[in-house]
Length: 360
Image 1 (cartoon, rainbow, N blue to C red):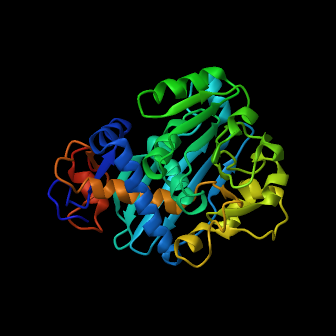
Image 2 (cartoon, helix red, strand yellow):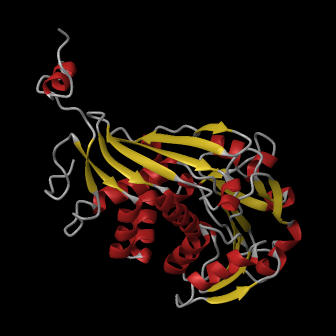
Image 3 (cartoon, rainbow, N blue to C red):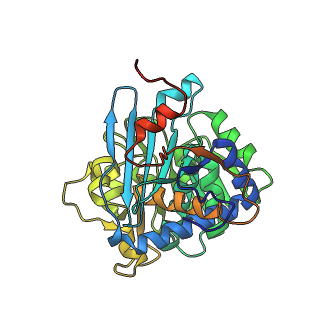
């Protein structure tokens, strides 16, 4: 625990970052800085890859969507995220993805942070995407196509602008209202924006193609003819069994990079390939154990499904920000852990509280 007096030192009081707090944190730190900060934390943790517990997320699937738990630990801290994915929610005016997360001390088992992670997941997904592209995209890339202009699109655009210098966007969504929303939200941010009438049009001339559609089905958002030499594909939307975005032929032409292969083979684009088809794990590239992009003609693919270490990194980043001066109003204090005078006398604490009386 931090010794900074702004963060509760009482182990029974847990900082809680609500949605309102998270928006204030983004506003105070700034979107560019928070994206860079989370990306840096993820990169540091990927370099420590071998320290972490690694498991595919625990998923409960239904016809309506999926609910998942994503746990990991580095031996000192333990973190998990609860997240859902319900594409049908959008038609009902609800979020497709919602999430919350917990960070705990391995030493005591006590939680040290509760946080919303609907906004934070969007931030960490964009941060992970651009961290991967730093190693995989061509240097001096300037134009990105974003196919699927939903809740994640603006975060992706701003991350790639701030860290890779992307200044041209080609936007497409099957719903023109979503494309207009994305374009309007990014006005004044320094982009040259082109609204496209098809995925094929959007991909034309792009150095990087980001796909982030929501439908839970095996779709072909990108066909083989849309992908030219040297393109980096940031495939974000395929993230559960039976949900893909790319034609299989594209995968066969690409150098494929993933977060955690056992999970991605179940949930990612590579579920279309044979079980032992060779792929590269991104941490190996970051540690210098495997080459990333080999030349300017190579097609690279980051088959991103999201992995627990990224959420751990994002929670760790937020927790560290609460230690800094001026952050005392960026969380509230939750009385989460019972604290009897005698750890063995939990019942006695309840009895003496006055909330109940002894049986006569």
